[in-house]
Image (tube, rainbow, N blue to C red; front, side):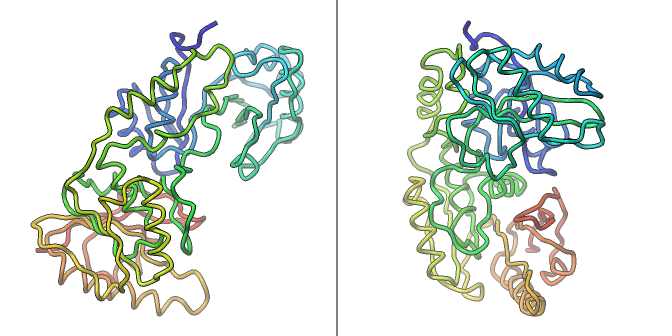
Length: 385
């Protein structure tokens, strides 16, 4: 059996609120995708699944849907589970793990659901080692060689999917050095997309921390796929066409631009953060097109250009006593932007309207999501000229 020419149902999982941004990205790759709650779905061959894993900047995981069915009791669940083609993702001797969530369903015990599915998989593919019990998200971030099956019960409808990614997709490989409260790479990529950056105008992050936003911008400007240099779990599935992953990486490598004329700058008052940013840029191989400077917001410099972008994640202040200091910082940030970046466009994450007002800029929410467990809005707008 060869998976490549056979079409499957794929689903790219994104942080809640980012579905529209992810849909535009998926369609730009040529995927005939549709937005669904929590992600985007399409039907395609295994090459499309690999392409999504390697190229989607906003998705956190790509799964292949194995089955969807209704089950109100364990006997019904077991009957459907034995019909799943487990051999598409494992062979005798392979290991399986399950991550199960159950909401508003008669079958609500995730460990019991996982055990029934494990039993079914071992019956269908003798010799498979299936781990009963549901593992949580943190346990699946650094997975061993076992295949992960993602199971979702919602109102008695069960969706069983195979994780095709392996390590979560925000793990690009470059961010080994971090500053305080690091911004996840997928959120940074979503902010750049939401900002409407044209890829050639200057892009500045005056509170860059460990440099995630400038580095993601540089990767985009040079058309470097975020997963260009990693392999994915699906490459080990039975029947996967030999060399398909290598062919994809070769094709994506040929699309990389050697350089970009875009000026991309990050700055931060924390010298340790800037040191981390420079190391991360080296690992991402974009240090030649991103510059990082140590200075405060009040010393932020914006090049003389008729148009540019400021994309940033200012501090929110989550500890008692931080509120006044953070409000003052946002007010100072607004003053700097109005005085030195007139005519530019700004995009930022904001946890509350009270902080937005400190900027004294007209910003509009384009997406709502969460960052580090804090609900935030992506606010975008033009700075008056």
